[in-house]
Image (cartoon, rainbow, N blue to C red):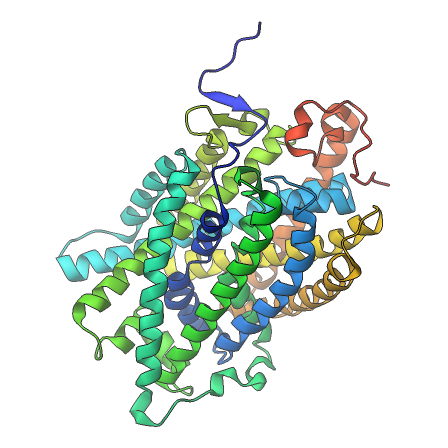
Length: 498
């Protein structure tokens, strides 16, 4: 009888630990309302100079709701922690699926690691200013990384309870701040809706504004990543996905607009450039008790921490899905027997974060602009690429199988979302210099998008290598938990590459 490592089991994540509320908490925590408003929206205003950030959130929400129609239709048929990777595999073939997997790893790692920049800067600032401590941004970031490393190895339902408390608290405080800002417009001139005017999304900064909006929503698609651990994935995933989009859209659009009311639309960019992540707190501090403002600052930090933890789980599960199918080393496809967490994938994500943070420390780079905004923008671009590819994959998948899901779910909505997301993708790449805040001639405007071309090419090359050298592994790509028992040749619905 074969011996097994007493701490690991392979093939499946622990089932039945997450219901609809827990999944919503995970994915909305990844989107992190206070992080998106105090960090993302203000930095978006400051770096891009675009007034239409509130409208961008609403436009992106509408496109993502359209995308979700086909996305959740796939989720009812395919339950796999690989999410985008699995869907692209089933719709466009194994090589495309592996390419999508490598793009996903780059994108979600960029989102997760980028958040350490703003977390370290905000926490160190609060500790130094409020408590007279003399700590550094990078020390705070490294300590957070260590705590995330421990939590990443614990039971996911326990993590969900932590996220639930933090998320409810930050949503409440964000709504309180919004009410205060709208009730106290600049110079008592009345409430202005200028930042919601469609004309603000026409011009050179439209791509920057839209990808800033997408960055705020990244995480909502993670509902399918946790599908294997839900009690009823066919019911939980669709509902959690739509709830996540609706909640984040309302919070982001409302809060970004409320800030422009409090500063005046013509001053929001200058105020964001001057005050940075302190803007929202400085706007409400004259009208609220110091305790509520301080509470908001602490909840901003916990919001960042919750997002870090949620993205850590997402990356670990992508690595698990690839390791389980032996696309990546099989050690990544093992889970802790004690907690059910994907142990090796979690440890790998932590190691990568530490390596990147070390590089930024040695380079003495700006943690807000160069780590937070640049890397999260890079991550948002990657997720935009993945969503566009997934929309096309949904079309292809349902066109080749017999189903009764209806034309709207399987053809019309995916087609429209592919067009909308593709258009946003083209404009974003063309205007990536505005997003980074660099000159149009800067090579960085092309280096960042080109990294995904390299990632996709690497995935394609590795898929073709597996097909030639390890056909048994190649056959199981996209099968998820069934990959361990699948025969060499299977009649699964994965499209055979040409």
